[in-house]
Amino acid sequence: MFSSTKKSAARGFTLIELLVVIAIIAILIALLLPAVQQAREAARRTQCRNNLKQLGLALHNYHDVHRSFPSGWICVDGGQHSAHDGLIGAGWGAMILPYMDQSPLSETFNSNLAIHDPANIVFHTSILTAWQCPSDPKPNIWEIEEEGSPGTILASLPTANYVGSFGTEDLHGCENPPGTAPVSGNGQCVGNGILYHNSRVRMRDVTDGTTNTFLLGERRTDVDLGWFSTWPGMVAEGEEAFQRILGAADHVPNDPAAHFDDFSSHHEGGTQFCLGDGSVRFVSENIDHGLYQALATIQGGEVIGEF
Image (cartoon, rainbow, N blue to C red):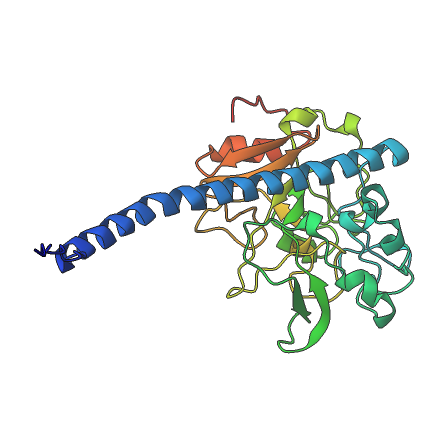
């Protein structure tokens, strides 16, 4: 006698079960994705912080050798102070290259020529990641136009996200004639921060205390507005030349009403600064405006509270 056995039919997912599984997976992805993005941003913010610490250390090493911080930018015309008519224009970033293991690059710069002279092309087009915040979506190279002549390209320059602290004055004022602040009678554009035109600020000059004074800060890139910063220096006759390497504490970080020469970042909630003692602090965009400006001056005599 033969016995017959009935094989049970293979059972698959029903359409409803499949849709439930897909919905669960979608919910899990929606829950995990923000956490992954936050972890990545935290890593980028840490790298940005490390970049600022590296730059701060190089500035301190420069000070140890030269007994002062470098000038915000050097610019003379016929041996006289000139904020924008000279041909040198080298900025603080160019001056600390030997203290960042970049001596070979520093030696390519011919200071007898303008930064954007073809003979200095290696110097003014070198991309240095130490000056770039990984949170900032930016091109590595941008073009600076001649001021007042849109479309006339003076040079290609490397993008940077860290600028020196000029103080609280508007950097546009550096275009004023001698005797009209912030330009002194001898033609020097003097800020009330650590780095300004032809400056030689020493540690002892920072009477407000180096732990309470900005040295460097972040600057975000905005391609649509043409907001680009750089490290080599001030390109003579370049559009917004001074603002490309220095920043002002006019508006608090990331203020919607801020100008290009203010400090800003793509970090949520504020901007990172390197202080005069080399430490790096995250400054909230909700900081009191008066306290914020007090941190930008070297001899204001203000009482600095918590920030």
